[in-house]
Length: 246
Image (cartoon, rainbow, N blue to C red; front, side, top):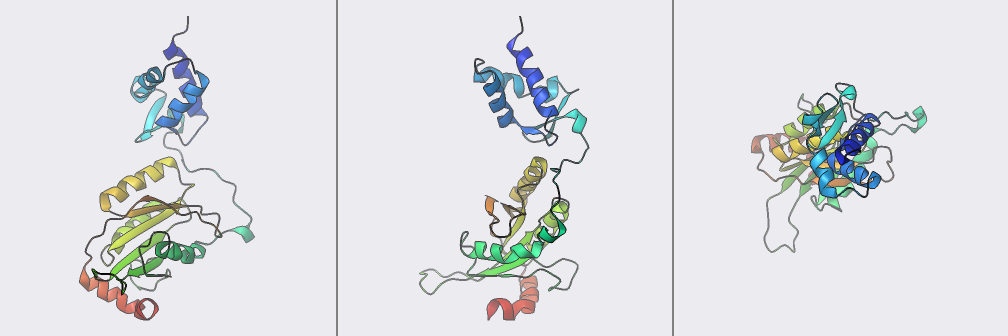
């Protein structure tokens, strides 16, 4: 007679073989329960949670809570997508203005935000794609000093590590910093960026990088406010004084 464990494990392995990016723990449990509704949920949890140890020859954890078949270890984990026709390719700068509006309206983090990008700051530390200021309004009882908010936006999965490094550099002159990455990025990449964002106090936003008309920005991690270096704040704000402060 086949035991419940003997039913569950092959099903999990088969599921992982069919998903090169891996499958999150909660999704595995959900799928197994759908396949074997008669098996108690606690039995499923007890069988699945340490399969990367008990079946290390076939299963490993690509990241926290993300199980993957060993046949995909070390291979490109990005979702393989058919590239659109050249005329339909969306450019990164086409999202700058909509994210600036998102900072002003949805997040209410800026009283004014502008698209920037390019090499406006003219140094190797990079220029934010979007930068904004947050000022007290006349009706505020308690006033606060002007805050600078910066954002780095990426529409592809290949430059996420570089993008995160740039976002960290913006903390030298920004009170809050966001990194904005595609929802289509691999689960492992999103999980890693989320973990780093929490450690470094950087805000994480996911968005649909294929739809410039409706990017569907979605906040995953809120940024922590900190005090930047006033020398760098003044150095860079002088370069965009007309655009942001007049």
